[in-house]
Image 1: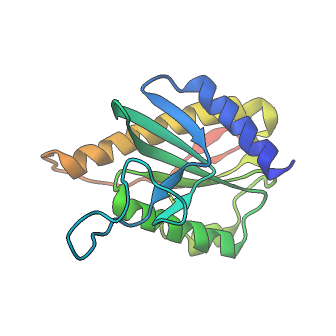
Image 2 (image 1 turned 180 degrees about the vertical axis):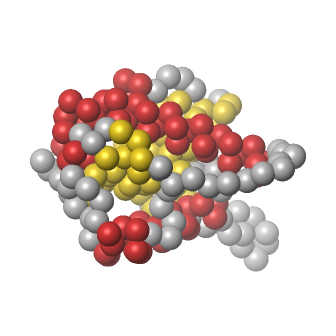
Amino acid sequence: MQEDEFVAIALAAGQEVLRPPLLMDRGRALLYQVTVDNRLKLTVEPTRPKRGQSAFQTDLAVFEEVEADVQIPRVVLEFKKRLTTHDVLTYAAKARKHKQVYPYLRYGLIAAEIDTLPGRFFTHNEGLDFAVAAGSYRRQGLHSLFERLLQQEVDTSRRLESITFEKVAAHLYRSEVVLESGGSGVR
C-alpha cells in the first residue's frame, strides 16, 4: 500500500470518529520554535504556522478548536511504510521540538506495512509517545484502532494541558507502557 493511500484511509477514519470541537487535518504545519525579534515582536504568526517559517509540516494532526479561529494541536500522526532507525531518530527529534511549543502535544508514528514494531524503535525513541505497526490491523481493524488511539491520545493531551496551565495538586505520578499484540493489551 502506498504511504499516501494509507494516510487517506487514516484521515477518513479519523474524520468519522472525531466530533467537534475536534477535527483532523492533513498536511498542516506546527511550530517548532517561537522567537521574538530585537524589538520583542513575535517573528511568527502562532495561529497560522507556515512550513519553512519555524514550522514543520505534519502528515495528519488532530486539532481542538478552543475558541473562534484558535485550533490547538492535540495529536500528530506521521506515516511511514516501515520504520528505519533514521525514521525513529528524525521523528523523535521533531516531536521534541514541537513539544517545546505545545507541551500537551502527543506525537506518534504509524508504519503501514509492518506487523510488529522493530526493536530499533524502543532503542532509539526519545520523543515519540506511540507507534503502531498497522500491518497487523489490516483494513478491517484500522477504524477501531484509530477511534481508540485518537480518543486516548486526546484525553492524555488534555491532561497534559491541565498540568501545564492549571494549578494541579498531585500526590502521585506514574507513567505506564502499554503494548498490544494480537488485539489484546499486554502491560
